[in-house]
Image (cartoon, rainbow, N blue to C red; front, top):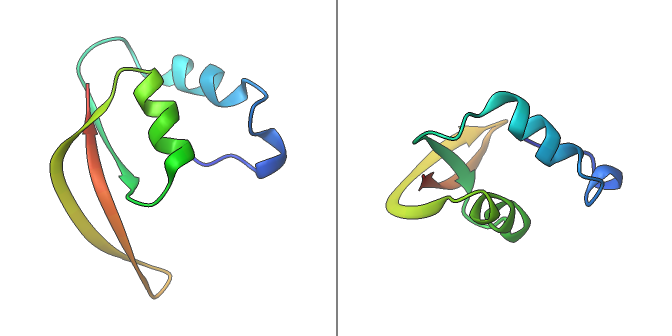
Length: 69
């Protein structure tokens, strides 16, 4: 999930997340170098499990880590 920068801190990200993700176990992939996203997901009970991947996005390599809850 990506929000426009001017929406950061508005609560809309949490509302979107809550509308789509239930409280059960789940996992997601997030850019390794995205401290704001890591903090958001940590507040929602997610933690890195050691799995990583690199994907090509628009011709560039994106290093991602898996977060689980």
